[in-house]
Length: 322
Image (cartoon, rainbow, N blue to C red):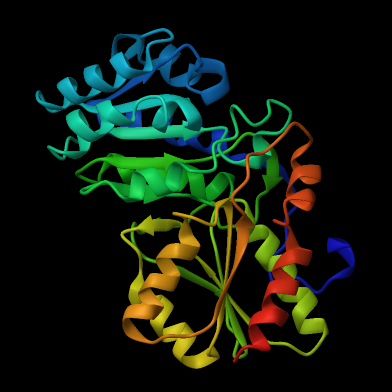
């Protein structure tokens, strides 16, 4: 279907966003000798092997001891190191929330919590690993920055950018091969939303893997005479409230699209921003109070309503509420 649509963005290659992290991490290591890596027995899955090979004295395999990893990382910052921790998103947040809250966020330690295999697109590993609550947990922590890039190139750029950013960061990325459709030379600005497509009828705020689905949805809507604005919210906290308010002031309604629970995710942040400043109808595309299950990424996005077709349906629904 994508090939027959008039897409504003296109791709020639697919690649996993975790590889964008791995390549960005290696480059950050070359740029700054204070960048160090810690991993909880998942070097291959997190694509941290190249950094480990290049800088063995700056890499620490802590084993299956995620809570310990967070404590070590917090301590390393005291002497000026910039630790990047690596494990699955489920283990990066749910398993170690106490350590992150007490040892990292509370004192604003300069730790970069890098979390792979997030969301439903983890796929066959199933519900126990498909965390859909992590953005909510992390964005509620004072001092924490939350970033969820959309493709390989943006993830690489974000990884490099957070090394230069002072303060704790949660960087979320994924496992599946995904379209690469953003500029490889892009400058990643933390906290600055990216208006990808101009529109006048409805705004689609998307994050992570669902940015591509929003691009496809925009083309479908345009073919039916509906003008959709697509904004990439790669930084969920701090949220670019100005971009949200400016867009919805023009379109009058919004759809949010994310690979996360309705509760606690991007949709909540957008809705709260509008409620406080300029109330407007919002429809969520996300997981509705449910755990995941085993399946391919495409099967799961379809079953749980997180694909382009569901973004189109949500746009039509919210337009009817204007």
